[in-house]
Amino acid sequence: MKIAAIAINTFREAVRDKILYTLLFFAIAMIASSILLGKLVIGDQTKIIKDMGLASISLFGVLIAIFVGIGLVFKEIERKTIYTIIAKPIQRYQFLLGKYLGLILTLVVEVVIMSTGFILLLFYYEPSPDMDILKAILLIFFELMLITSIALLFSSFSTPIMSGVFTLSMYVIGHLTGDLKMLGSKSESAAVKHITEFMYYLLPNLENFNIKAKVVHNIPVSWGYILYAMSYGILYIAIILLISAIIFQRRDFK
Amino acid sequence: MLNNKKILIMFGIILPLLYSLQKQIDLSPERRGRIEDMKYLPSGRFLKGAALAYDEILGDLLWIKTVIYFGEHYLSNKQYEWLSHMLDVSTDLNPYFEYPYEAGGVMLAMETKEIDRSIALFKKGMKNVPQTDKRYWYLPFFLGFDYMYFKKDFAAAARYMEQAARLPGHPEYLPMLVTRLYANANDPEVAIAFLKEIYENTENEDMKRDIDKRIKEIIVERDIRLLEKARNIFRDRYGQYPDTLQELFKSGIINMIPYEPFGGKYYIDQKDGSIHSTMVEERLGVYID
Image 1 (cartoon, each protein chain N blue to C red):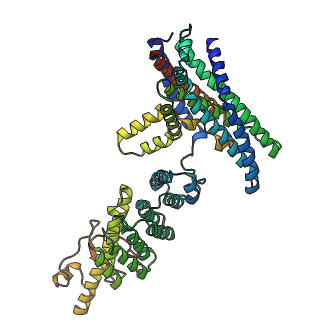
Image 2 (image 1 turned 45 degrees about the vertical axis):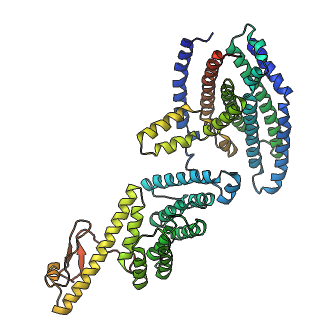
Image 3 (image 1 turned 30 degrees about the vertical axis):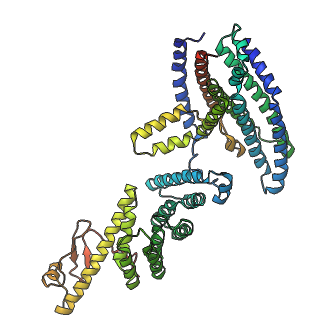
């Protein structure tokens, strides 16, 4: 209950910060590009719209996850509002979890509205578009949740600017770990091989959530795979939140 | 309340699960065949814009992938479908970087036999790489090699070689090589010098073995030609072919019987007087007109 109260409050704050205005940008960008590209592209027009739509959902989501996520805890400390909260009978990890879920709620609203607009646009161009696109959106959402947890982790001990830099780096690295492992496996030094392999399993592998190309080209993606990717996301998030809670628990607010 | 014991237990459960999940995901068909998918690699000119200001680093990454691509196929099926495209894109992204032109051109010429593409790549390199680059001279050098060894265009070969010999960093023997090339384009000595240079610059052990074998074959060819010349002198002098190569030596026409690089021996065939090596069955005809 306490967690829900904080979550809803975080959501309200995000709405007050006019974060949902990004949806307007999304709508304009989507419709404008579909009209523009529709005139330019020869051949499969819906492919381009699908690419644009999925990329925009992912991009806007990542931007919100990072830029709102990094300020979540820091803002409370800076404005000293955190004193009034932790003075109440509430565990610190509950506070942290509430903040996290509040931002997730914001992301749910964002993604749902963007997806609805996107699918409506698809219906405008095609009588019965392939609904596998929802699988891709589902995994994009799990990626966003993971990024949010990373932003929260950094936010629990660092300034917003530093957290932003760290989270953005993790986002980029998370999409390149496959290359890291491949390059490491070509190395002749056993030490390099082991280190890159270790890093590969340690760092978040965000490519697990990337099935955009497959979905757009109608290559089947099994529910088994989706399930694996989702479980991976949930477990990874659990670890990150656990570490954030440990750090946050030991912090001294002055 | 979170206490240390609970936290440790949670880590102990979740981390192994994460590890095995990732292994499972890597094995699923959805994740396979990602690295080799070069069909969608767009042109370098497009990527240069799309990569914002990071085109060099993207080019570096692609170059590393190209080397791995080459290495993997060299050891497996020897099919290099995307090699020239990858080289082209990575040199578009990294126009001033000498090594991809040099190594790529040699790969295309020596391994995939795409001579025209190799020549185009060397020429592109000569246009883009700054002449102050320490390895710049390799570009006209190997370009000349392509013209000589594969195209049999000895005039063009000598021209590019001369250009290489004027650049800093070239080996001492190069001017002499140019002279020999102008005098007698069919000189095995010229081919041996080139191949030795390629050998020195190759790191892949398997490829080194291949090149080494080729060098030795050319040495055999050179020696056989030398012995044939001596045999003809012998015939003119004594009216018959010698029975053994030893006779050439004894009569003072040659001052030693050359050492066979594969560890075999040279001998003279009694039937028609032709000269062979015990180790190489067929004579090399590659650079012979």
